[in-house]
Structure formats: C-alpha cells, structure tokens
Image 1 (cartoon, helix red, strand yellow):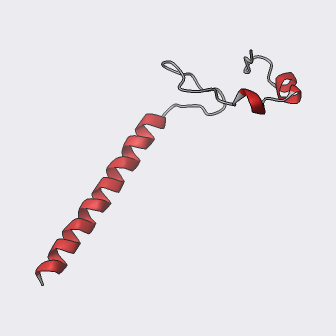
Image 2 (image 1 turned 90 degrees about the horizontal axis):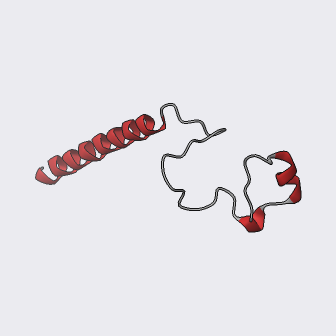
Length: 68
C-alpha cells in the first residue's frame, strides 16, 4: 500500500517536471526564428562544420556562411 503511494507521488513529480521543462523550453523559444537566428552571445560552434560546406551551399547562402 505504501509503495503505491510513493510510486504515485514520484509519477506526479515527474509529470510536473515535464510540464515545467516544456514551459521553459517554449518560453526560451518564443520569438526565435530558426530561419534567421540572432545569437545573443558567442556561438559554441559553427552552424555547419567547415568540412560540410560545399560550393553550392556557398553560392546559395553567401551572406550566411563565413568559411575561412
């Protein structure tokens, strides 16, 4: 009987955590454009690693790629 209550409380806590994490993620992403991202700090790494950048990609997005 007691273990059922503990399990239910644990399940409730996990569900509340999921809800809070989802709300936080949505709040962080509000107004964010994946098509034209604006970074608010230093990038951790390149959006596209230099070894994957092709000539076609450079021609298609010359203003978005800075290889060199």
